[in-house]
Length: 254
Figure (tube, rainbow, N blue to C red):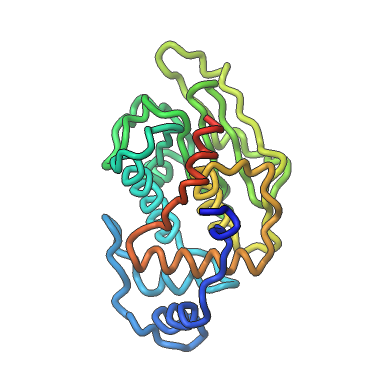
C-alpha cells in the first residue's frame, strides 16, 4: 500500500458523517438516535459523552479514557497477530490512577500490571494523561530507557506546571536524575475546546511511528475530522488499524 493512499487525516464520507451526526444528536436540541450510549470494553460511554465529540465542544473525560483503551487494545492485536515484533513498546497508564494520585507520576514500579499488555517495567514509553489545574489536558510521556519525561501540551509553549508532573523514587534510580522537558514543536490547537482531541491524537500518531516535531500543524477541519473518526472508532469498539508502511516506519524509529 502506498502511503498516499492511506491518511490519518482522511475525511469520512458525507454519508458516514451524517450517520454519526444523527446517532449522537450533534446539534443543539437534537435527540440522539442511540440514547443508551455504548459499552466499549470496560467502559460505558453515555450518549451525552458522545455528544461532547461534536466539533466546537469540550470532550468528555470518558471519551478520552475509552479511546486510550482502544489504542492499548490495538497494540495487543498488532503484536499477537505475529506479523510485527513488540517494538517500540508502549504502556497506557490508567487515567483514573492519575486522578487519584493528584495527576502525578508517583512511582511506575508500584503500578506494574495492566489488564492488557506488558508489565510497565518492560516498556519503552509510558503514556500518561494529565488534567492540569482542572482546566486543560496534556500528554505526559515517560521514557524508561533514558529515564526522562516529555510534556506534550497542545496550547502552552513553556508550561510551568512541572511540579504537577514529577517522578518519585524508583528502586535503583535517583528521581532527581529524571529530566522533564516540554516538546517544543508539535501540532497546536487554535481554540480552547480541542485539548482532549489533541492528547488522543498525539498518542495515535506516536504509535503509528510519527515524529510529532515533524508533523505539520493540523487544520481546524482536520481536528474536526478526528472527532468524527473517534466517534466511529468508539461505535465500532476498535481503533483504526495501522498500515504496514507506518509499522515499518515505527520499527525504523526504534
